Image (cartoon, rainbow, N blue to C red; front, side):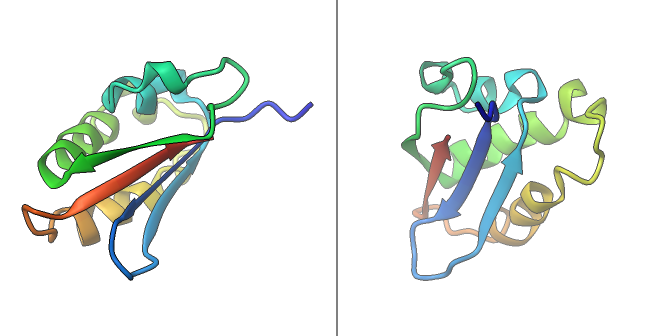
Length: 103
């Protein structure tokens, strides 16, 4: 059985830019987005939630500034999320909506 947690975020528009993270990192993505209900222990529940730009920015800042990510064994694993935050989220319009999937 393949035990893994994956996190995917994208803006609800026609662009296919997305941020991706595979790993648990002490569940930091679940807690930052207040989505513990999607944590099935061995993986995420393959469910998604939508967030405003402000909510997304706040949650990703919690993730990026966390000790869980700072201490993660593979320091490059967060690069996709970091790029998404700096390139997409910080330039997003207030009315934009983001979808986050935990699987």
